[in-house]
Length: 364
Image 1 (cartoon, rainbow, N blue to C red):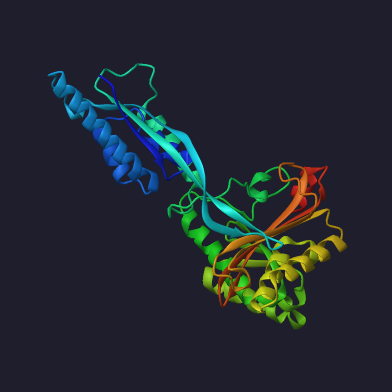
Image 2 (image 1 turned 90 degrees about the horizontal axis):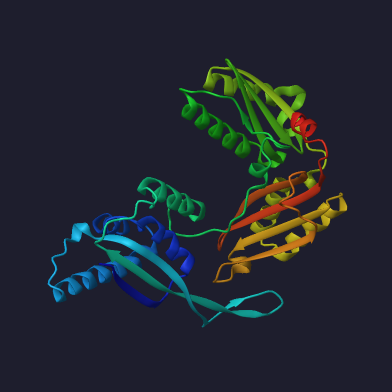
């Protein structure tokens, strides 16, 4: 005895509603009800009301037909969200060149069907269904705060094992968490200690009781010091704290203008000095192209120029083939702590194609 409930013109996009509906499809009424109660999504509360309405409709139909219906026997037979109307709001969003766009408000129609009939044998198992839906939610979720992010692949992770290698190269079964925390603390301390040295990347190799630290910097003299005094002091401090034999390898970055991390940090420093963000972006783009970059993209996000409403601005010059595996794309991220708040800076630099990825990965 299936019974249907419909909620029209709900203020939520159909995509977000479908992600939550995938969690309850095929579950018992009580299980679906508890799952919606403890799901940290705005769509869960809206779907919960539709589910309760469907249950009430089923009980009302049973009373009219003089049929006894147990709530525990009800299960979610169907649930789906159809795209509703898209309306423009009065609020406008600022755009470049003095323009403005009207913000859109997405609506959807939520439908839930409950039934007390026996379930079909071809239905997927509950564990597989929940696992697939949870994986889809985790792809869009940012650390559980209910926000959603764009579906962009990290340029390094996309090319790992092809022409990129890992920044930490070691393996451990028992002490994995301890060693990982040690790596993160060491990288953070070195980054903060040599702020003026232009450190873009730190790699760590472990073998037995040896710890090898590879530091990529545009100003190696600051780290090495006079006659190697600074690097010897650094070795002793790390060895005393970790109890391992320390080897430090300093590698110079000959063209810091083509390093995305250094460019992002450079823009962040300029923004902290109250330089206009468009001027800082244009300067970095011109520098990279002058030193041979085939393409560069810079994106800044936050309260730009002290605006009350945060927004994102970006510029792209040249080519940026993010889906081409052989493309040598460098990526960097930095944050500028201004008086108006934190501004995030992302930089992508396309330096050409790598025709022999094996050799390139070995060199790295």
